[in-house]
Image 1 (cartoon, helix red, strand yellow):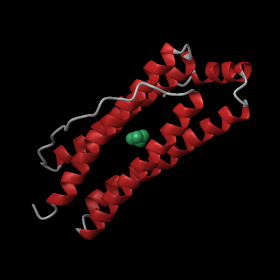
Image 2 (cartoon, protein in one colour):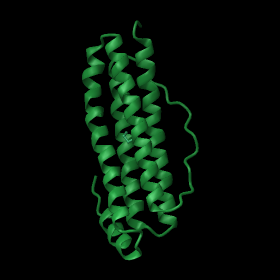
Image 3 (cartoon, rainbow, N blue to C red):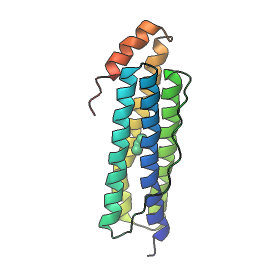
Image 4 (spheres, rainbow, N blue to C red):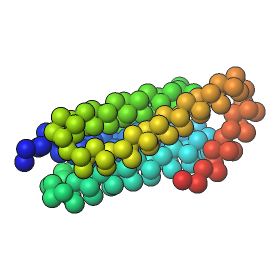
Length: 163
Ligand code: OFO
């Protein structure tokens, strides 16, 4: 396969998407344990979303006849200082994902693989949303000045996330 390097990199990203979900699952558990039910629900939804990202990418590779493999996943962190730490860690994580998606597109261009370049556009747009989700969450948390009443209202809103 002339573009083996590219296909392998997408496969790596499949595992990274699942690993991303695993990080959010750990955050959901931390939040539940600290009685932030809304944050926990929000992060649980995020875990589900990451699995969708991984599945979509894996299916694409399978459709191309690439033998998808699922690599090892590190343990999810389980300690956070507070909900602001949770949101800031999430944004940093998404920035790393964006970087990885950009690298895949760069490789697709190197191999002049239009199928990959076109397919990955969806992830480019998705990463705009992902980063916006967490930078907005950070702004909302900061707006409360860590005031418990404000955080409780925000927690209630996060508990209503539907997808
Ligand atoms: Fe898959 O976008 Fe978040 O990590």
